Length: 550
Image 1 (cartoon, rainbow, N blue to C red):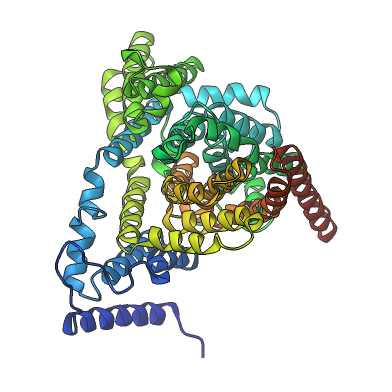
Image 2: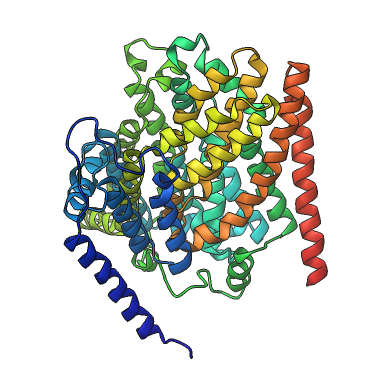
């Protein structure tokens, strides 16, 4: 007998109610003291909350509910089943609570930046700049392939910060891809795949600074020099860019993405009933706006954000440009840059008379409303990451990698890559992943500098891969927001693409480990071309199989 939807919902509600009643009647004990650790601390169960959240998100397609259940599971595990203490921990714990996360300087700055950027996008839409750029682009970009290649090019050019990349590329290129019937899921994938993968191989970026400071200070290793040496070994970042170009040029789509692209060709850009940011998309623009009303604000935004980032690093106090990037607070710099861009846009629009002062001010609440959904997901993702940290997930991963160090070192780059993928996918943070793993790697490879470079590159590559396809990653969330795509649609459509590249990269790190161990010389000369050739062969084979099946 088939169970109806209402019956399933009722059973789910009854099951949750029964669990809560049991936890109230039989609460677990929560020992006091600074040295407190839950029963599951530093064990495989510390990864259970993100696994629950990700699994539920993929099965139910409900992001908020899935994140909430994952956070609740983390709080209950931390408090040994005591529901009252779990709620207090989830809300107010100093190292991962909901309120505490919002109040931190870094996270609060990110939220302010997202709101300001949403307001700037609303302004450009209202002034007619986005519509004018779409009309201009339609005269110069005449094919779906050209629209997607333009999105890739723009994503590569904006390499300063991944979040800034996601929001800017989406707002600029979305009208162009819409005109050429590129699905929002495909646009979100392109935005996401040119955010972190580009930043992790760009010497001047917030990511370069994060990697530089992840290298232990007492290790005797120059962090920035190490970052530069890892670029040719960052197989996932380079492979992702190659894969995007190949699938666009070959017009190859597979997995859930194919359904979205087929529907987009027929006029349905979303496939699912959900229409994110429908109010922003449907707003009637001014007829007086021109291309300059989009190009100039975006150009000023890019320049002012770079200036804001190096300003926070002390560039105007005499610190060198590279050192200023390394010492910067990118979130604060992005806030400064977006504020400058909005002030510039105000004078530009008032001087040109494209919108009235009242219309200008009305765009701020419009921009805020358009960013409410991604901000809620971001805050809940931070909360879930905080719960995972309280359970000692980072220490458990440390133990796993350290236990592998006794094996043949030629396999360690591949092992580190896989562990980094899993950790970043589970926690939604690439920066947190390589800040955990890089000190371990530095302690393992003390006798071979080349193997150390390969292992750190594998760590960075795996962290970017896991972050790229994780539903709770802030970059993934902002890519969905930038493309105005349903978040779950974005995640489910890009996972097959990301894991295809990841599988080839794992083989590449096996090869690099063997070459680096026996040659003790730059192995990227051989391993990088062979890995990219293998990836191209896999894509070409998939293309032939899919075309033959059709």
